[in-house]
Amino acid sequence: MMKNLKFLVLTFIAVFAFTACQEDDDLEFVATEATDLVFSTTFLSNYVLNSSVSGNLAERFTWNNADFGVETNITYSLQAATLEDFSDYLSGDALYNLGNTTGNEMPVTIGQMIDLAEAAGLDNNPATEASNIGSVYFRLMAVVGDEGLPTLSAVQALNVELQEQTDVEEGGDCEFDILYAVGAGLPTAGWDWATPVELACTSDGVWSGNVEFTSEGDANFRFFTVSGDWATGRNYPYYVDAGYAIDSDFIQNDNPDDGDFNFKFIGTSGTYFLTINTNTLEITLD
Image (cartoon, rainbow, N blue to C red; front, side, top):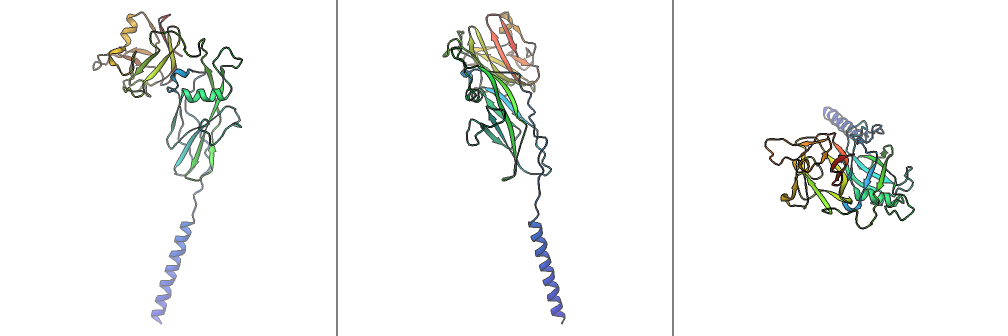
């Protein structure tokens, strides 16, 4: 009798434990829809685009972590369209799908912006009736886990301008076709010749382009006339001695450990339209 009782007790415990484990396996954590999926980028009022520096950064899209109410992996996708309602968005087309990440930022190049602008019907040939000014649109999609339902951000419109050229093949006549820049103040370049910032000759005696600057850390940089050649550098005193008026967001870097007297960016970190004008002797940021 005692053996039978023990057997029944052990059987009951085993069945209870199995049922409890099975119920635990059936538990599902349901994520709520994120309400804070928004871009944190400070966007420019206008993006001037030149194809001669298509590899340069046009904008770095950033955002905060989306809150779905549970701790889980989130995949973000940056999407683009030429219509505000995204009715032309094609999920399988690289033109409209700019990348996926589990992080909080995504770079978009000038070339990608130009491709979108041209898909929107813009061109930079003044001989045609098509406008060179218009808008393209972006949104962020967040997906929880591997198969969660997507959440979309509000649509962000960006004004773009394809820089018109009197000669479609060349922007202008300059001492050098491209002026280069590297340094800690240029986060897409750093002190590395693998990805220098390139300023195209956009009109006679003028180099210009969109450039991302950071004021964090040393924030210094220098211009160069030949890519990879440190001897061709043009530092802050070079332009002062040549009589240039230099934007107030730039100062001379007086770090005693740096005898190069580089430019130092002291403005608000972000993307600016940089112009070096040899006609008016000005270096300006817009």
